[in-house]
Length: 402
Ligand SMILES: Cc1cc2nc3c(=O)[nH]c(=O)nc-3n(C[C@H](O)[C@H](O)[C@H](O)COP(=O)(O)OP(=O)(O)OC[C@H]3O[C@@H](n4cnc5c(N)ncnc54)[C@H](O)[C@@H]3O)c2cc1C
Image 1 (cartoon, protein in one colour):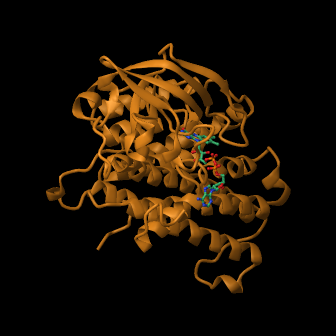
Image 2 (cartoon, rainbow, N blue to C red; image 1 turned 120 degrees about the vertical axis):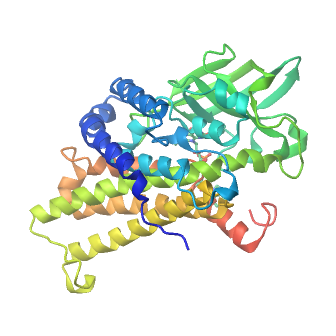
Image 3 (cartoon, rainbow, N blue to C red; image 1 turned 60 degrees about the vertical axis):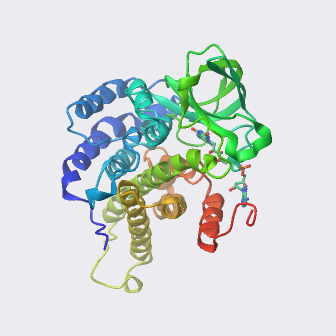
């Protein structure tokens, strides 16, 4: 049996993350929503604090960098770094998801490195901030169709192509780039490469203007004869026609529960504030009476709370499986699909419940509704998660079910 209560040993971590959300992120939330593309310098101090905690062993990973590779299965039931990261990210996203995505050294590229790097790479890239670049103008949901190439040249690979929508792409120090060693061999030849952001072959084209998460920079790059040392290919350079793509896709088993945790965090922010505003307006929720016997607003709040709880539990299960070496691709996708969907639904319905207060900028509710949408898009859209779930349940390949 899996116990889906939040493990007691993480209480200190979640309390701290909640304080950070309340006292550091919330106060600057609107500022960086309005000042899109300006660097949230307040986060530097916060990142240094997290580094200090990590160095002292006082944290098991409060951010995206905390996700880890499989642990030995004889360790028994474990609540490890995937769970810690998910809980930490959930709490901080209760503060501000855009700012969390801008947290130095906690990028999605850090998760990719933590998930698939060898021990030498783990050591070399430790403490550095890494973004993740998969998406291209002609390859979004179908990540197997990427066109960026990596050709061998002596002790380097030479990368050429275009990458768009790279979260933290301007600010990070490293970018984990997906490229193909041989496009004729299809998806098996796709590998990930760690590219220094300062590499002259990686050229920043522009930053995007967005609906939400405006505190987070979203970059577009060109890779022009970008030379990357061979030892910066993550994982094995061998092209195994059966397993290679599964290797790079494995990153998603760790990152999708994290994105689900972000969605749960932002949705809970909306619900918590809506509950307060409704209480101020005289609407009290009675947890001991059936929803249908209460006011429409109270009944709606109860319905949204149960959706949120379902999403939270699925996310915890997916993170717990990652910590315990249990194959979790199905659960990672289910948790992302559920949390992405209810995150959007809850935050929009909270705007609706609070009427004009929900819509205007005196409250953060309208911002949270804008921020929530991306969590149902990146790391695989709602439709793509459903497709993956269907394939896994029906035992179909990507060629059988498109
Ligand atoms: C703010 C932001 C940040 C991002 N950050 C990153 C990042 O850090 N790194 C990165 O690599 N990418 C990033 N992305 C890209 C993101 O992952 C893609 O936008 C996403 O994968 C969808 O790809 P697309 O936009 O090309 O849409 P498309 O793939 O063109 O999809 C368009 C629509 O069609 C649907 N669809 C597509 N195929 C199917 C199908 N087979 N069946 C049913 N429906 C389907 C999709 O669900 C979607 O609704 C980011 C995007 C944004 C907006």
